[in-house]
Length: 180
Image (tube, rainbow, N blue to C red; front, side, top):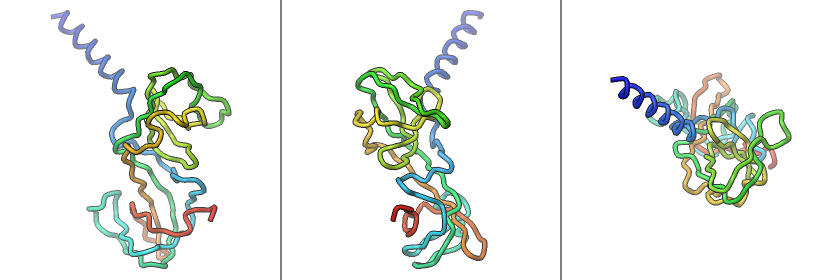
């Protein structure tokens, strides 16, 4: 009986260690505006846009935006349904955390990092061994960095001029890019 208990504990701890190496399903990066110069501010609808109660296309529509109608882009979250997979092909230093100007990771050939959100200009947030880092230049050009295999949805929280707010995954907005 005690051997069975020891084996069970070993299997569970091994499973937890493996699970920590990959992001949880539908990992959420809150507050991210996922491209260069992206900013939350007043946006303009560039077409008809349904705004939902929840981050779900099947949830109730709170209000409908018409083309040309202004709305406040309040916040957002990038949901990584399927993170991008980058396979490190040579030893590098990369992985930045807030408040540090030095890379925090020494990655080796064969290490795998998981892209959970783009940030723009080739920069992104990635998951490595249970933590989130911002990429630097050294991960550029690695296999998988193009993100083609990834599936991510940027949900935007918007508020209309009468104060109603809700969520949309639509990209039909003008004035989101502060660079023009």
